[in-house]
Each structure stands twice: as C-alpha cells, then as structure tokens.
Amino acid sequence: MELLRYKQRVLYIDIDVHHGDGVEEAFYTTDRVMTVSFHKYGEYFPGTGELRDIGVGQGKYYSVNFPLRDGIDDRSYKDIFEPVIKAVMDYYRPEAIVLQCGSDSLSGDRLGCFNLSMRGHANCVNFVKGFDLPVLVLGGGGYTMRNVSRTWAYETGLLVGQHMPTEMPYNDYYEVRLLHTIFPVLSHYASIHMLTRYLQYYAPDYELDVRTSNMDNANSPDYLSKIKIQVIENLKRTTFAPSVQMTDVPRDPEGLDDEADAVLDDADEDDNKDARWSKRRWDKYVEKEGELSESEDEDENERNGVRRQPGKQRRRNMMNYQNLAGGLNGDEDMGSGAVSEKRGRSPERNGDDGVPRNGSARSSNGNLSAAPSEDEEGDEEEDEDEDVEMADDNPTTNGNAIHGSRPQEATPPDSPPPAASANPTANEIVNGMGNDAMDEGESELAKEEGVEERELEDGAAERTAETAERREGSS
Image (cartoon, rainbow, N blue to C red; front, side, top):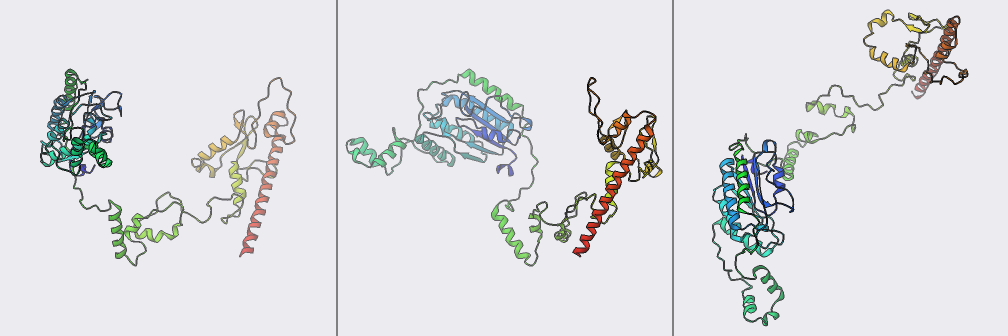
C-alpha cells in the first residue's frame, strides 16, 4: 500500500511453499498490483490458489497462481519460474517488486514438501534482481532453523553483490568443532550449551549450503508445461501495462499519525490563546444528538458558517406534544374542539334537540350522511387524508358510515337472537326498529350523542379552570 503511493504498478512474487492468499485477496479486484505465487496445492494449507483463481472485475487476470505438487527440484523450478516472471515483466511492466522468500520451500523443511537446494532457491532472487527495478525482499516461512539461516545469509550476499564461499569463517565455536572431531571423549566435558548450539546451526557438514535429497518429483514435465502455457495465455489477456491516474502525494505526514496531529494541536493553541473555539477545534468537535440546547451553540455556529438544517426540529426544554384537553398553549377552547375533531365530526354537528346541523341529511336508507358546507368545500383536498382515517375508524352498515357505531360480531344462523344491551348501539337501533319508528330512533341517538359532547365540554372547561388557578397560584 505504501509503494502504491509512489508507483503505478507493483508486482508481488511469492516463492513460499504455501499460497500467498492474504496479499492476493487484498488486491484481488485491482490491476495496480499483480500477485504471482508458486506453491503446493492439493490437501495443503491454506487450500487456495488453483490455476483458475485469476482475479475479478478490474483485477481479472492480475492474480497468477502456479499450483505445484510434492518434490519439485531446482531444474524444474527454474524452468517454470523464469519464463513466467519474464512474461509478467513484458506484459505488466511493474515499477517496483516485492519478493517474498519463504524458506519452507527448501529441501528438508519440517512443514514443506519441496526439494529445492539453497542455490536453486537463491536463483529466484538473482533472476528478479536482474531486471534492475526497485525490489523489496521479505522473509517468510521456514521451519528448519539451520536451513533458514544459511539461505537468507546467502541471498543477502547476492542482493548486496557479495560472494559468499561455502566454507564457514572462523567463529567462537571452531574449537568446539575440533574437540568434537579429534577428541570425541573430551567433547563430553565441553560446554553442553555451546556444543548443542554449534551442532544445531552448522551440522552435519559445517558448510554454507542446503542440499537436495532423493525425494521423488511428482511434477512431471508434461504437467508443468501445461500449467505454464495456461498461465502465459492468461497474461496475454491483460491490458498491456495498465495506466493509473497519478496525483501528487504529499511527502509531509501531516495529520497521518498521532505525533503530527499533536504538533498541530499545540500550534493551534499557541495561535488562539484567547479564543474558546478555533477553527481546528471546531472541525474536530463532534456534538452528540440531544446533548446540549441549541441556544448555547447558535452564536458559534453562525461564526463557523453552520446553518440550521431545514426540517430539523429544534430542541426544547419541554416536550413538544399537545395536551388535547389541557389548553397548555393558551387555547382555552382547544380541548372540546380537538376531541370533536379527533372523532371526525364537528362539535356543532348535532343540536340539543337532536337535529343534525351543518347541512347534514339522511340517506335513502335512513342513515346520516353529512353534506359539505361552503367552508368545507374549499378545504376538501387538504382534508383528504383525514377523511381516509375517519373512514377507517367508522364501521359501515349497508355500505354507509354511521358515526359512533361499533362493528357487530358474526352470529351463527341457528343461534338465538342476542339479548338487548343496556346501551344499544346505532346498528342495534337501526336494525331493531321498523320503518315507522326510524325517525324516533335517530332522534334518540342524536340526543345521546349531544349529551356525551356536553359532558366532554364540561370536563374540558373544568380542567381549563383548574390549570388557570394553578398558574395564578404559582405566579
């Protein structure tokens, strides 16, 4: 990621015995990083990295995997490594290379299953170095300690141009070697720690070399040839040297780490000693919703160019709901009107004599239906949603709405007629009366509704008076 700040394209090469799955996954969808991994595949950790894993989206064909089998030797590894890397250089043309030199692909590794010698492993480093590009060489796996120390020392010499002979130079354990070779009996009395350490790192041949074994090579030439051909064909499908729009990358790590951020905070405090809020402090301030009232921040918001967002409710010290019957906002007559409006009818709908007002009329079947007045006709569109809610709240009889009625429960045909209730509903009155007594029943219903409304008005007036008395007493 750091190299991508300065380079357009970066090549990652992994010669560890395990698949380089982490780096491949990180750049699986981009063409700015090409990952090339030579690894053991098939019932082996991590179980990924088959030939068909080539990337997706913009990164398609920019993930290269070369699956191998057990026992590959130096010659076979060279025959596949050099042609593939050469094709990558020709088609991709990276500006920097990251080479992961895992030593667990060496012969005799405790976890690995390849048969590479130290020089066969180092040939990969030497070949990549020959392209004269910036190379970042990393270590990796390696679980036989004496092989890891030898190989990385030899490859470090290749990178710096220093030839490393196979003979070990003189060291503190040279006398221990003589004792162990010439006087085996006396070696028992030597330092056990020094002898064990010496034998661990340099035995059994005491040379800077890791040799191959007689392990069978399960990678046939035909298998390696088919995989190599397919990999190169996939490389031909890539965009030739994909270009990337580059921008100037700031070299100063301003705000990128805690130390640089602290320096900027100190400089800001020195420049704004008498100011409670500087521009930098205000930019870093995060206000929690509902933490403070807006009155404390309005002046500072104005100075910093922060405006109140449209549609955002202002915070108050009291709840902003309305008490429909209390008259808290100075609307003395709000209680009765609000209750009547909530029920979906006007407080003057019915008079004391039970005669409907405001243009109410009876329908053909005797039910009440309100005709809109002149004032209501102009507000018909605005009250459309409210009428829908009223229609949902009011049950219907024969398709027409009756105010104040309740839905009837279904009665089986063979069941006896229900007993008359103490407070008959509108439906019971309508269904129980004949045509001759229809007008009388409607008049009774209207009277009952008028009584209920008067009781509500009286209760609202009493509560309003009590509220006024409490206000006078508190003042």
